[in-house]
Length: 319
Image (cartoon, rainbow, N blue to C red; front, side):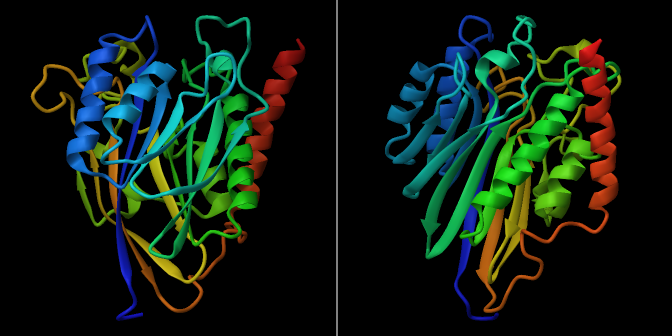
């Protein structure tokens, strides 16, 4: 509705690849991430793989002026790696740890030990209630022989259910994270079909960054080039998704990705590229259309496909 108040929200999302003792140049990169967030003045920063609470504490101290509100989600043996920095007060938080999350004997993968989870922060900005979710789903490791596909599908389903059941009082839902799924994968279709979340990259009026919005690219000096051989341009596995629930509209005015080296340095922020979205939120004075509880009519086929994959995983586990 013309004349209604509007809000622009700038969001930064990044898998920081900050594993103590293992990630290359971790401390330098965490400092770079903090410097950039402080200078750029985003409204929200959604970070994954901040495995060290010391790194989080240093970021919190550095960003106290620009982002006075933050939360670190603790989970599993080594932590969820999830944290949020915000310009606006955080009213409430909640963590849900996924019920299926890899195998403890796969020490080299480590997903089981971190207790992969979804974190929720609730905020009120200009009278608008936001439910902001940050998550990191189980890694793929091998696309041709993906033993973890059933785990990731269960996580995607639990994530969708968590969002549906916790967002009934929200006006706007935001989800950021490393979903470890390509845009056409069944897990993404399941998540988006069940929640109605829109993909900021697909909906953006303007885009700037890596071709096709890829966030894991072979040009990045920290990526494993062998994993990307089937994908010469890279893959898009990091997302910002959104949905208006009540009498609001949300549009993505601009979406950007980083494209390699951080400003003034010889290294990137991470082995992933950051995703940055500018969202325009406006009250329209009437319901925004389909509520979060209205599923995509084609969802039945997606659910059947997902159930078949999970069933195959169960049979393999019983052997």
